[in-house]
Image (cartoon, rainbow, N blue to C red; front, side, top):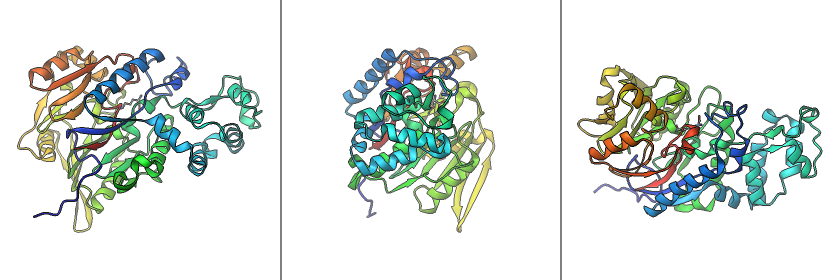
Length: 410
Ligand SMILES: NC(=O)NCCC[C@H](N)C(=O)O
């Protein structure tokens, strides 16, 4: 008899029944998106806040209706910031003098350190302008804030918190807090790290065995949208516009060393905005099937393992990709599900996250309704598709998988 410890927590594959998930309902941060800032903030449009909020509520209601426990990021952060010690530590990291300037960081801290927790969370996610700083009774002394208009942002907003998949990802019972590639998203990870370290929802039997990532930096970037646990022992990672080879090798070294997984498969993606993460082009929908953007074709992969105390990476030609993925899933052959669309329709649905579905059980996925042809095709293949309206949310280039960080499945 094998002695398997009980799984109180964690995510051991992509499809086991989803139990608990972290999401972020968008809020005031969306009002900072303008035609001038949206590109730096990684959005393709300025979003209509009310509509985005309503669509996100539709998403969470759907998950709750399916028995999933939905944890709201703002609530988790608000709880944390009630504790003076945690508040002080988190502010110390988020108001980084290296990014803001020492005097600006001081100005900010003076203005916001004692705000009520909920208001402080709003500032940390929506950012704050010079005028707002003044309204809180602080005349900024930073030399960078002397001759700027009142609407100048002292602390940038984090509209991409919406995509909770990317800032952290569970791999079994450990969690990788992402060293993010883009500066517009780096503060997100600090929030997730604090939640996993200090929030009671992640204490005791629900605590991650280890937190990976903090302290990583430089070229070693990994974003959660590239992290895909094909089966409990095999992790696929997109080698993408966001996740670097250095990031993959560091993550693999860490996970393989303590036996969290046996194999890490790096998948060499094209470096393009439309497919910035692995999950924008493919997602697992049941034990043997992956939905895939048809025109993607086959890609080179690298199977990384640890042998005799050394890391070995074996390059596999693009033609072997499906075989490599099938091995990762632990099945004889992979069923690739690509909707039979012409190149135009396929590209349009992929851009609108048609391939970015969230499995909430084997063969049962959540999808945007606008991916109509892909959804219809999936149904014809026996997959249950639960749809919700997501056209406003999708303007940030993420779908249901991107908007969810599963913390417990099974
Ligand atoms: N996993 C994902 O593909 N997440 C979507 C991220 C979209 C976000 N606007 C970004 O560019 O980072």
